[in-house]
Image (cartoon, rainbow, N blue to C red; front, side, top):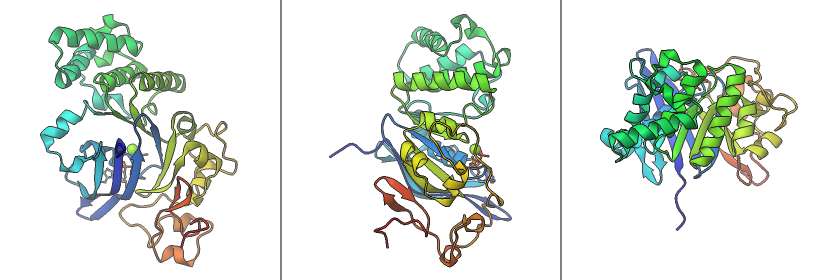
Length: 326
Ligand SMILES: Nc1ncnc2c1ncn2[C@@H]1O[C@H](COP(=O)(O)OP(=O)(O)OP(=O)(O)O)[C@@H](O)[C@H]1O
Ligand SMILES: [Mg+2]
């Protein structure tokens, strides 16, 4: 039997339950990430990207957040069945996450060297002295001189802080790295440096990467596969080359503008006319239907199901079901 995929999310439903009603942040999410691969996770603000990532890490603020149903299989084991203790050892060890704002992950009152050392000590059998040495090696790897191990986060620039976060995330050679907009808070030149660094390290450590981004250029450059998310659902999924070369879902086509191109797609998502959906009050049928320029009568009646339009290319649209679909 072949190995299970590294990450296999099945029918994941996550809500935020508020007094005024539930926010359906993730609704029937299906995603798969094979070992050693990079999956781009793209969508407008509020699409549910961070919620899905926090769900995988079991770091949702609960309440109001709640994983209602579904499975998150990591190496074939459902993370939703793990105890908090088991999750604590998986987090940082086998799965690490980089947040958009480095200060979310850094402790302002501990030196950067201590923070990397602590992560290594927590997840390995190395002695204190070897953990400290490895922490210094990690600083070197991310391009920060090891003499700065005694610095506190506030003594570093934004780009350097994000490098420290990357050092912490990779210190234990995780099998899966989830990067949630890792460079959005940085200025453009630093963004490119940090991305290059991540790319090199990802290859060196053979880490699989779930890359959450607004930037189609970054996704095109980085990711083997791309999932486009809208209103808590993956509306289109394919290899990056296929998705950029042949976008099918009206939402994806809108994001790419009229001339999608794998090389010319640099830049932020194009703005699509209409309002981003209110996750606490989604329209009936297909959630994209009010903004869709090809919507037909069935689109407001029934929610579409994902269909494999071409081999390995999935789309969630009543009007794009491929030739052989019912
Ligand atoms: N703690 C919370 N309590 C209530 N609702 C929340 C909470 N966090 C997120 N939401 C809601 O869940 C939905 C998904 O939010 P999420 O932050 O996952 O989106 P996102 O795709 O990461 O957006 P962005 O691109 O802005 O980071 C939104 O409607 C948001 O308002
Ligand atoms: Mg987010």
